[in-house]
Image 1 (cartoon, rainbow, N blue to C red):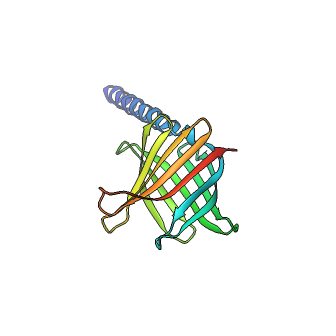
Image 2: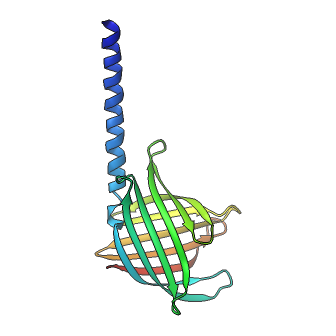
Image 3: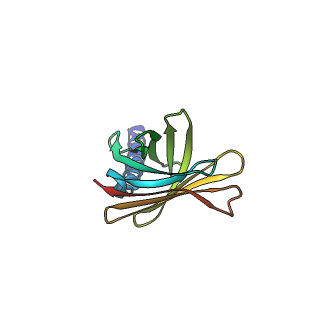
Length: 171
């Protein structure tokens, strides 16, 4: 009988802990709900050769897998209608480290794991190291149905150079 009571106490403690973790996880994922929707707008990008191009951008942001991930599907087309950006991002919250991660995939086969942080009401940044000591970061602001985002490159994490910017409206 004593063994049954001990097992019951352990089970209840574990279940209570797991339930608290699940509630924390769900809240962390819901904190990104300001991104959800269909977005459309324009922007510009500077390629590695220094040429600046304008583009039209569409973003579809939605929860999947019972709200455990946030999916970002983005497509950018140049003024001639040619696809110049085709990406999929999957954002999740890591309970073990208490941080967001985004796995980003491009149509050309490139991929990365980026860190993501909410930095204010409707504001976030995400970034990744390129492998040669440089960093690429994006800063987003979503307010009143307008999503602005700026991409910057730094070779040394001190000087930052803008290479992309867009402004989208909720459809």
